[in-house]
Length: 514
Ligand code: NDP
Image 1 (cartoon, rainbow, N blue to C red):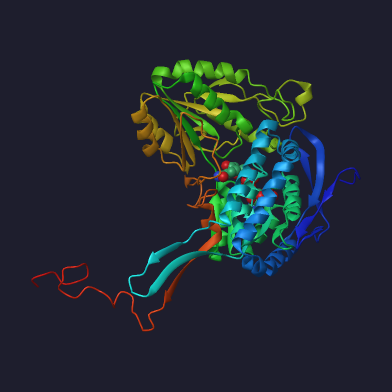
Image 2 (image 1 turned 180 degrees about the vertical axis):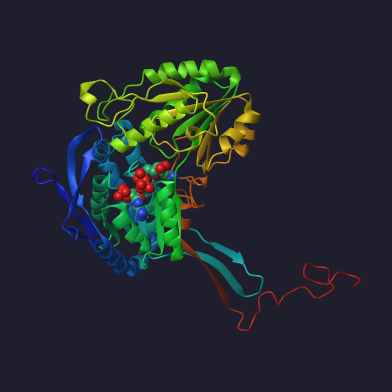
């Protein structure tokens, strides 16, 4: 990192870019060629987090006092800047995270979509106005910001996920401190530069890079950060929940998945194959919503599997920047080893290895974290590979006699994020929409492809009940305040005055005849 050609990036605190107090740096590298250092970033510690939180805290009263429609206008300007810089951001995603260019553009588009959606919330952000039970009294509810929001994000959607959190937090009147994943700090730096350019006042948006154990944990522990929004692994989610719980913080967790695609006897098999390939091997299987299980009824299993293997073998593995590439590298050497280990575990547990799981022989790919997409057949739904999140290009086929057996197989996992059913029968589709216990359900589409104006999140160990995106995202970053205005000029007692007289038979009154 002493190479002067390598760009050096600091933290954004109180509107200025500054190096970490320690002066230390860490590298970001290219998963397509692990030798390639892209940039050096501030390795921040507790002092940097404390400074960023203090700046965010100072900025919050003025930001909160800025009318929400005006805040929304800054988000709107930011959305426009994102659109203008879409290609530059997408290229950064390709080089830093490894996904193929088309998907990287999709990542940035999600950030644009949520920015426009939340810009509109500046004028919507509705509360309720309801009739009081008492005369001459007004009753309504409004959303209030919480203060400083701490945002901790993963590497797999390095532009979308930080903005899924930042946009609702900001439009609601909170200020933010973002701690991005250490694998993708460069994407966060670009986003922060555009946020400044859009006109967010100094201190409103702060970025601190550094390790989760140091910077992330400190953000969670800081008493001046009342709300933490985290996306990442269930393991880290549990650690954060314990720490945040001790301080009674608001905490939104978006964790992993073990998502299944069900294939019924009457499914359009070609359509199902397309959806399975896209969901299992898109983003090299590194989506929380990736399909890692296909649960197929015996009657069509052989035909589906044969076609799936043929198409999987033909997928082109390579660098994301090559337009012909369909499957890019994994994020790191460790992520590739983890997927290889799960392949071994599945085989040892009795599954049949149908294809993939090799490091490509092409010498041009020798220094990237590549792995050919793999399929295991005859997987026991209760085995480790049938239950645990892999987060790589490994698909398990689970065969079942009928859909009645498919439903428990799909639902009996710790996670509950996404699921899908391929069928041409309307009644089956509706039955499955109700029977599948996941936060997202798709009919005749794969398990990925959520849109930003609907709530996103999972059941069971996929989260803690909060949702991102849609209007629901505002719930994480706001507190409800109920307001009563009594203009009667006399004492009015709720639940006591203006009640039915005893004996008139109304609820709360004595029953007639007694
Ligand atoms: P991690 O949980 O390892 O990291 C996520 C973020 O948390 C990173 O910024 C990380 O920093 C930080 N972090 C790590 N340890 C701590 C800690 N003790 N305290 C505070 N922050 C910490 O997940 P990955 O980044 O490896 O992402 C992959 C995982 O995330 C997968 O399991 C996937 O299922 C899940 N995920 C879920 C999504 C969802 O919406 N449900 C979306 C995307 C991913 P650092 O990078 O420095 O370690």
